[in-house]
Image (cartoon, rainbow, N blue to C red; front, side, top):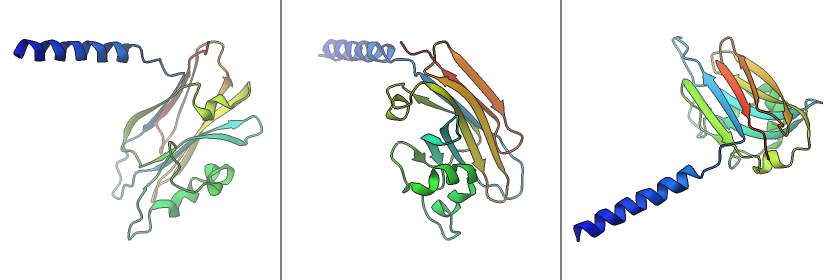
Amino acid sequence: MMNKKITTLILGCAIAGMAWADEPTPDVAVTIEIPRIDVSEYHRPYVAAWIQDEDRQAVANLNVWYQMTESSEGAGTKWLPDLRQWWRRSGRSLEMPVDGVSSATRPAGKHTLSYSSSDPRLAKLPPGEYSLVVEASREVGGRELLTLPFTWPAKDLQEEQAAGKKELGEVTLTIQPTH
């Protein structure tokens, strides 16, 4: 009886391992670093990342990190307009939360987001020149905006990076060519 359980466990692990190994590499990876800031009153930043076209029109929202629950201090959606560029281009027309886009604020550190070229936000992009825009705003802090240009769809590996000065650390964009 014990041998059958062990055999079943080993077979199950092997099948799971094969399925994991077959997972495709994401076509687009975005890494956003939130720096550790040593201040007396620290609040996690709200962060938005979106794609804009050559005319600086928002064409796809990738993520919005904010305090998802209201509190007695009035947090939550009240402070989303502090992400000024995102708010003007796209945010004010959205009803939060947005499935697959919005989530809770993140602590200091590097956070990687992965997208497949079949993701509806990317699949609908016509070929052309675009920019990834990442904006961060922090209560009792500052605001920062980084822009990384790219071509869609990628014919060759594209790697872009930019570094913020205070509210954002290094932001990287990696796009694998699609076949």
